[in-house]
Amino acid sequence: MNVQTTTQPLHTVEADLLAIGLFDGDFRLPAGLAGTPLADLLPKLVEAKDLSRNVGDVVPLLGPGSTGLAAGSVLLFGLGDRAKFDAGSAFSSGVAVGKKIASRSRTRVAVALPESDDPASIASAMVEGLIVATQAPDLRKAERSRHACESLLIVAPSEIAEAATQGVSRGQIVGEAVNLARELVNTPPAEKSPTTLATRAEAAAESSGLRVTVWDKARIEQERFGGLLGVAQGSDEPPAFVILEHRQGGSSRTIALVGKGVTFDSGGLSLKPSASMEDMKSDMTGAAVVLAAMTAIARLGLKANVVGYMAITENMVNGQAMRLGDVLTIRNGKTVEVLNTDAEGRLILADALSFASEQKPAAIIDLATLTGACLVALGTKVAGLFANDESLAEKVSAASKATGERTWRLPLDDDYKDLLKSSVADLKNVGGKWGGAVTAAKFLEQFVDDAPWVHLDIAGPSWAEAESATRDAGGSGCFVRTLVKFVENSAG
Image: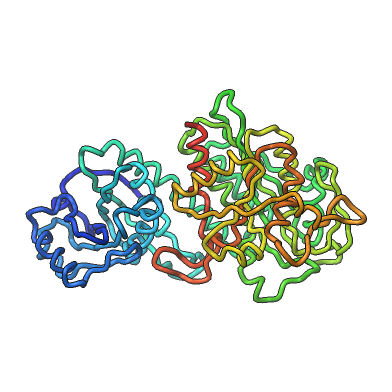
């Protein structure tokens, strides 16, 4: 899709469809509509309460020939409260109007950029949403339900043209990265074995300008990744470990991004109920998000040193599967007694975090669909944030707030480690009935050495059971935008 910025007046924009956002509350006519029939019509619709302007609301305007605009048809969409409008609102509005735009094939579409004090950020977020909306989860349907238009114009006033153009360019790159993560998550598990996912990662990395290294099982054994090997031994498919490198930060210290990549999670011998397996193709979301964010970081040419790590395996059941009571030796030499084979994500992350910490990075951020307990605590829209470093926690929180992706800080107190004590090994991989998200994070902390570290448990926001106005069912690609923003802030 060709995405560009134009500064021509709204009423002169020639397009199959023109989408115009309206704020809730006191009505103000969008710039560029003065003197057109639409300038008389919109206030009447608002006064009659025939026009909803909440985020997610989309209203086609009937009788487009009477609007006085050059566009073939007009679509009005809600922006919500003007005082609360931010990048998160812009992204959600972009998704909502984008889904309507992409519902059928169109050649040329124009969207008016909403007024704001930060046009670059709003333009980026709006375009991110519009791009994300072009891709539905229906990857294997005979006929797709979404259609990307050939040309997308973002209409902005001339005085902010430069900022808008920068934001639009960034938004296309980040939106495409989010869709890469969503596509990988929504891919059926039979089509993304660990080897296949590693190959996809290699291709995406190379096309984005990243340096990529893929370890096979022999190299993983050589590197003493006992957790990854232990989980993988229940599958006929070998594991993989992918390293993605972006080195554009000169002498600055490296940021490490680590993702959990379980391409299907049956639970192992601690077998999940059938209903709990239905969405387990998404248990590699953390790895997909790391890959997608790294491609965006590279394409944006950010002046930073960033390395992404993807630990990839299946958690299946065969005659060699990991047993309860087995003891695994992690990369850093610590031993773990396995008392639940469905607590496998922390085992593969332990190796990846150990390896990442050995490189002495400035920061480590890991992302994982790690615990159902985090879903119980925070629901489906908020990720749990755990950290051993206050400054890093604040920076990650600031990046998430800037994008509208939601996190909530959860405790990591020392006494939670007592719940992980084992009589036969250094640790056990589960901590008992209570505080499961916290004990899982406390387990991971044992493998980061003294590196500043944030863990994001994204089990909730990574997946949606049903479609809504501003979100599709299936994988969400959550926190790609946050990671990119965090690296941008760090580079700046």
